Amino acid sequence: MTWPLTKPAKAAVLCIAELSGCYASYAQAETPRPALDKEEQGLLQRALGQGVVGSPVAAQRLDNPAALLAPADRTMTYRLLDAEHSKQTEIHQIAASPAPQGNRLWQHRLGKREVRRLVELADGSLAVSAVDDFGDGVAARYSPPRPFLVKGMIPGEQREASLSVQAFDLEQSDRLLYSGSLKVAVAYLGAYQVTVPAGRYDAALVRYAARGTIGPADVDTTQYLFLSPGTGIVAAVESREVSAFTVYHRSENLAAVLTSVSDPQ
Image (cartoon, rainbow, N blue to C red; front, side, top):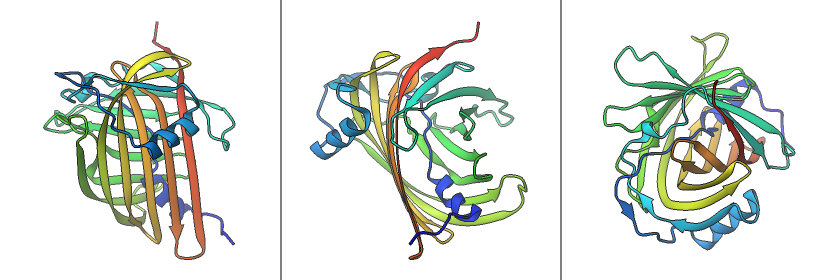
């Protein structure tokens, strides 16, 4: 038996539900290497479809993440492939925000669902500092910011971090719903040729894994993001497991491919 997810419990889902994207500029090319095991290859093929993920290509060190975010105000349309969304489309946009302390900031809007705030750290890495979820009416704040793209990573490298999470009521910003902690692992799995409706791209593949406890819920999420220079996310796969004690369990899967881009006139 499962019980409906209340707003506080939904906050736990929000804290680990992220589908935002950017890449880093190339420095020195690395020799292509097989970075995905057979299980992961099968997972991506089942989620995205035959022919989306192609052969590995030369992968580069992540030297300038911010240079390869999607251009500000570009409209990016994605087709959602999972059964729950039945091939719906979703529009994403990234906008620059004021940066009073000197660090560059961006807002990534995912349709009508969420706004995610990206921050450039002192070393040039990108991290997610906060997520506002309009559907669930909650706002998550990460401390320190959740690693997104770590400057200097090379193919095959993994970085790990621990962080705390606070989930607030979106309409009452001072009302804390839940708090908790996550362990996050970011792995750079090389680069691949990716073919989606919007075109063919050479894209870096980054895997994110986050596990921890937020309020009464245990969370476990894994994301695979294909990120192309000057475009951002071209394809993505995500799986999430959320369970609260023995009375609630939620499993979700999401897959998306880029169908078109449009720049302002």
